Length: 116
Image 1: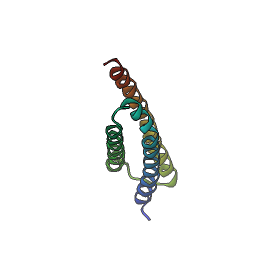
Image 2: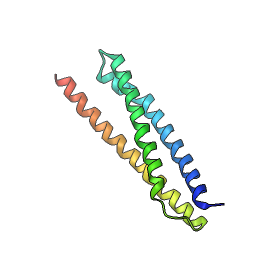
Image 3: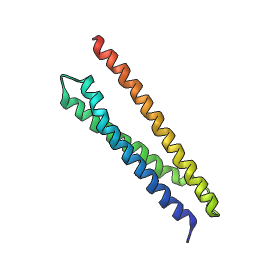
C-alpha cells in the first residue's frame, strides 16, 4: 500500500476530528461572550456566532486540504508518524493562537461597545 495515501487519510481524519470538536466547543461557549456583548440583540449575537463557526471550519479544513499538496513522499513508517505528528501539532498550535486572537478582539470590542 502507498504510505502517502495512508498518511493523508490518517492526518485528515485526526485534524478533521480536532477542528470539528474544538469548533463546536468554541461555538457553544462563545455564545455566552457574544450574548454579553450584544445583550440587547441576541439574534445578532447568534448570527455572528454561526458565521464565526462557518469561517472557522472553512479556514482550518481548507488549510488541511491545501497543505496535503506540499508533503514530501513518505518512505517509511517512522517518517509517516513524524510527519503526522508535526503537521497535527502545527494545526493545534494554530487553533490555540486563533483562540487567543479572537479573545483579544472580543475584549477590544466589549470595551468599545461599553464606552459608546
